Length: 98
Image 1: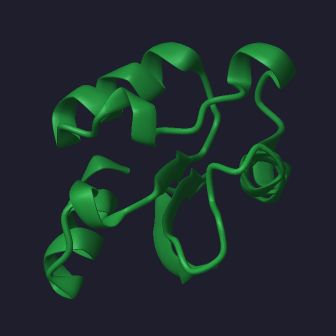
Image 2: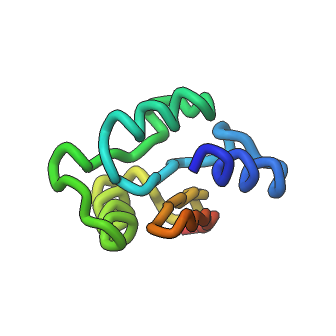
């Protein structure tokens, strides 16, 4: 997921300063902490709810995005980067304008 984040930002010419929020796949907290460390994302721009819900597999990103929107962390017009991985060594990212 670290590579997907870096590739998305490099391809679009953006930095974390341009993003309102990074919403990573919520597999486990230690993994999220390591990804954030590797990519140098500011903690206040990373949405984490795995401690509250655990790993919800493919449901984690839409639920996290909904929570972030309701909390005002992904307002209208903001850029949000989603990143996930799945079984079979598959990963992807999506940059959304709210």
